[in-house]
Image (cartoon, rainbow, N blue to C red; front, top):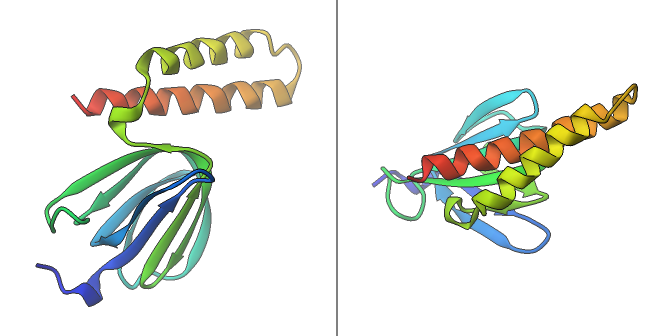
Length: 143
């Protein structure tokens, strides 16, 4: 059993619910510019989250356990002994509605094709596509 003092307190919350509030050995996060891993004693930082998986290592099911949540955008605050993840939306892999995520991906591609000269429309289309692709990837990993 890992020493409690060498664990992070990790909290994952959305506007609707708290999905996770436990000690963990490490947490991987989908930062806006790529994945990052946080361990106990990390330097403080704040970062914007993209769409992807939050992966918790050594959570409530034991030091070897791995728990995943799909998040869609938000922010993370990293302190040496705790990590707070504020996501606009977060789902357990089994909660992902695959047909709905596929419809979202199709909608994103349609938005992309209809964006014309609007940079804002392209950005929104990429946002929708990234979120849908992340959900589909998470759902595929659960099998």
